[in-house]
Image 1 (cartoon, rainbow over the protein chains, first blue to last red):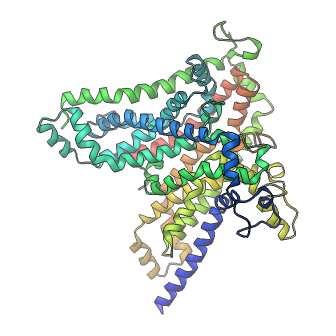
Image 2 (image 1 turned 90 degrees about the horizontal axis):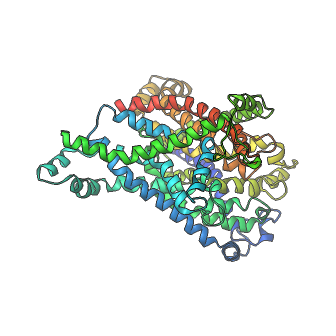
Image 3 (image 1 turned 120 degrees about the vertical axis):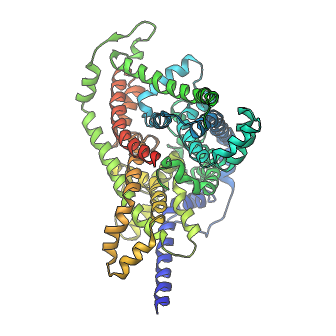
Length: 276
Length: 292
């Protein structure tokens, strides 16, 4: 009897959960689906679900007309470059905080986090002035630096929480055996921290890929990544649903896949270790 | 464990990150502060080289007394409040649902989290065109199917539309964090309460909700900081028209569209102060957790 109740309950829970999940996922599903339709089928009334002629034409047109590969390449360089640069700067800092903590470590960590709270719009003009001064406007290097600085607090913070889980005795033993500081970090700490470094890399790549204030405001034709590419569809091309869908699908597909891999580490990275 | 040598090494290794962030924070901040006290209209020939006229607090009082200011504060509050209400309430319910045993939990989780990974410009455009378009959008088909008049979402219900888009983006975040918190709840406590005959609503109110308190606070604080500076979603949908001009967007327009740097910078200082008030509360919670 009790068992029947639990099974019934599980059936209901499953049905409700799947319904909600499918509704939440629908806009993404619909975008992917529409990208395979012709423009006429995309605005058909009633909407077509699977009974249409599947075509890859939109993808070809988007690439041909707007040089999609250039934007994709910019996104990869900017997101990848800023993340790797950030990790390189953050590893030594996080090492210091985790293994040689001082009375000020906590304050420094919190202060770093607080720089993340600075509203971007408040410093938009100074940053563009500096960019003009150093010829960084509309360059990939400029965006790499800005996005690195934006995400640096999260990178330091995530690495710090991962490093803290590594027992300090192992590092100490290496030191006793005569390892230099460089060896200690490079050959003892880093290999042990690979999973943590990997998930930090992943999450910050995603955050940099999706960043849509600086990428929209500091780029024009040369360094514009996918966020700016999609924004250019806001009108009037946005009325071509199938092409908008193809462009959107290409912009989000790589990140959706990476995101699914990183979902377990998400909570730690996004709440600064405050929720476990 | 820490020797004197490793202490100084630690300081050296922390230096790049600290110096970079210090520069990143201070330089633009000081420039914004400086500009906010000057008359700075680049289109009328003002420039740093030629020297800017000091105008005291007049930009600050002009920014506050302009017709656009209070509506923008109101818009910001409604938008942030609306998204928080929707994401926290639905997030708690969804987290409790996903915590129950069900078939295909992994796939459901992935489907629910997915919107969080969609870049803001894509979410905004997909919602604007494919869902909310008054002629061809899915919503208009749905409305017509039920015999209702389709809604011109981004004109007639513009702020609601922005709230819907932002809620869709942030619900996964809230759900994920609340789900993590719920999973750490001691199930024996709940079972004991159930055996003692506590009804479901009471169990939720007296056991689940208090347990989630801290996670909810963190979700609210983090989301507030991000929502206060929402930009792309407004930029590609309404461009600040139809009553969707938030404080962030108003400052953006002052700086970029009207090229009034002094006035925009004064607005920026207000925004920075506002964000810091929220940040202080967040830092307190995070800091407390660091001690534990």
